[in-house]
Length: 481
Image 1: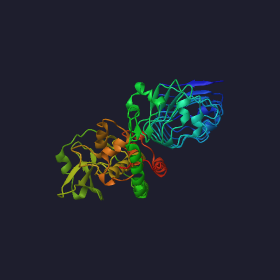
Image 2: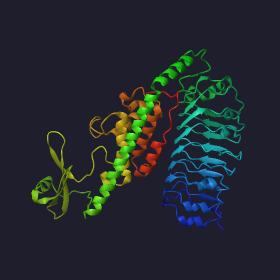
Image 3: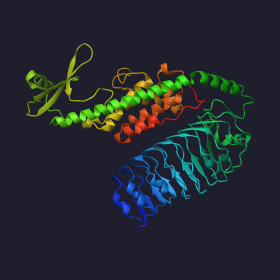
């Protein structure tokens, strides 16, 4: 009987074979660092003896099946560096055996499952660079077995569990780039902590002396980005109270307006998504009703004069809102389709090889494949979201050959201290000033996922709707634009 299957680092492609579910005695499955795609097969629920699942650094997507949380002996689950979406299984860790969990760098959302440390054995918890939200479960604050906690770059809020600073073996605690609030605990008994980062949150008060002793090792930058957090060397921080009061007043007057505006934006984007889906379905029906054959070519063996001679009334084979399509026979005998696009402004027109779609919205892969699919529509939808956020047209405002996607990427790459909030503030439409930043950050992240150059890295339309309708809620203490 086979107990271990290690196929890591092999450049494997395609989907996971469902036949592997027949290896019912399997305990360790490692398919990491390959080029596999698709979802985790539901039939793997038969592998009830699994203790280790390593699927990291592939191109998997979709939901993590609920049966993963039901595996009675699961100890290690490492699936980082993929495109998984939706929530973690609610019952994950309930078997009391979980030792290591690493789901970083995916598109996961929802809250942290409450029973990850039910058996008191969890050592490694890595959730960074996802879309998790909500408070950190109290149970994790009592998980004394933890050695490494890395949950930065999410949307967590609430206070940091005091127990994190009292674990006997904890050596890494990374909480930066969230929306954590409250004060740091006044006492710390952990003598093993070697790495601590809480930057870019909403933590207030002074750094307690016990933690302040660690500053000489970690430096100020690991506490920066908390406007109301005072470093130990500061004799007084009079702005803390005033800032908190001002923030409360500002929130009282603008909270309802901000929520309304963000809600309207979300509703508009969902409505736009429905329209795009409807148009896509209609296009598929039209394609089926027309026996057209499109041929892509990369080398042109004819001259511009050959093309112009074909632009005659008798050669018309189709008309549309974007222009007229002609059939043309070149000097070498090759038949080609020529689309004459009506230019905007001055009534000009130009002849070019057939390209479907509006410049600025076209997915990059279409330029060399002339094929579109759902992920091409996702790219176009992402461009629309960036238009809403930046208040700019997709092309024409950034110089020759530069569209809104490239402009935003260039702008972000030039930031001296990059973060989600800094990226949004660098490109956001000034007319959105005064609104809560959380909703805009969420839309911005979704938009940047949609305009990934690799189509496999983009979420599906269904996943986008889920992320839009389950966006993290703004907390009263969050900043405004």
